[in-house]
Amino acid sequence: MDELTRRDRAVLAFEARQWRTRGAKDAAIREELDLSPTRYTQLLNALLDREAALAFDPVLVNRLRRIRDEKRARR
Image (cartoon, rainbow, N blue to C red; front, side, top):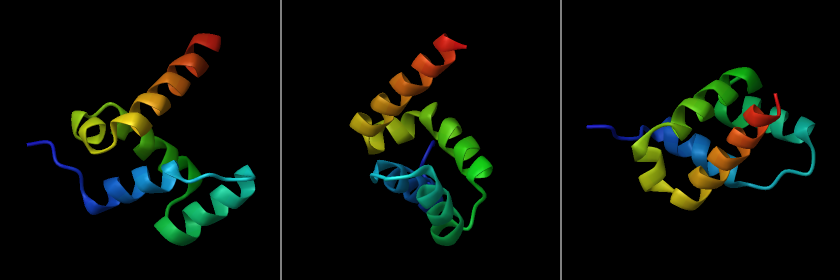
């Protein structure tokens, strides 16, 4: 069964927050999640492809999927 771990839920909850600057977000990623910003982005992108994440927070996951798809289309 595809269940979210505590860390998976923390990453999604973290991403739902609003950030004034990228630097503030990067510092919080290091401090609160004990991850590098690169690793955080890798984990988040993997989460976006999981049905369990969609079930956990469908509005957030669908919004992030749209943003990711738009960025990929621009490349």
